[in-house]
Image (cartoon, rainbow, N blue to C red; front, side):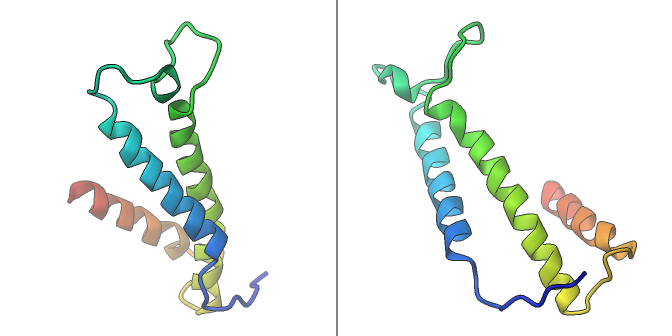
Length: 102
């Protein structure tokens, strides 16, 4: 089923994506700094806990997963592909390969 979507961006997804990227850059800058508080460091592998830093990558994966259905629905609404076409799998795969090779 194709649901007609507006061409407007979804502000909550954009805001969460931006915040996630900002935090990702912030915690990567802290990686080589000494004297960083415990909440700003990765937990040890044997610890049964998570810190603020350990939540960044799962948040990134979550927001990517939230964005995929909207992107596919938009392509289907624009009649660029049907949900069962081989292009539905080929186009994102070819884009990923091009990005990885760059």
